[in-house]
Length: 220
Image (cartoon, rainbow, N blue to C red):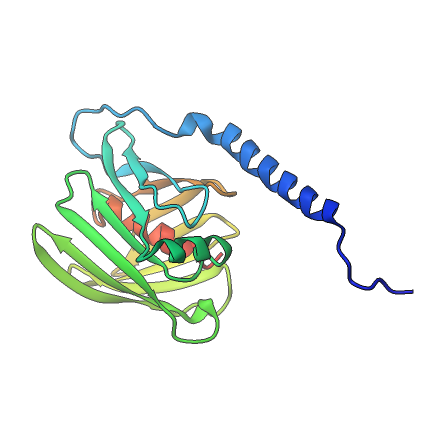
């Protein structure tokens, strides 16, 4: 005989306990990686470490720290209302707007998700780059056909930059003029992820690369 569909109260209690344990274990594993000490010589390197936030609805700025321990910038998710933020906890692919800033905030990058179909895989992004008060707007186009295998492109400094990622391998590659101009590798594949950003001698700003990592991860 089939059940009437009644779910016992202890089941909900177990779900809550498992969730609390998951959060606690995640905090314990990554506790030493937060509030990183910065120092360095003030000259930003072209390689950096970036730690994403544990929850995708967090509004805490995720810091970019270069290999010389200089603070190189941050990326932050922003919401118009508190209700949007709460809703994003349960449905993180809604109301996505990100803002990235370099260390002195002379470079500010804002991106917003644009849904162009029923599936998130079909979505693209509007971007605005403000550098020393000069604004440039463009679209980040999406050509992805399979989830976790992402293909994007966007114009930057007169060149077309292509972004390709197989999220199973934990690598994001950037190309312009048929050459690899930047590389992001996942040093930890499970959230909260730790990634290594190699800007290849400054072709693309670390802030832009960190923003692109945040974009790509939403297709996971």
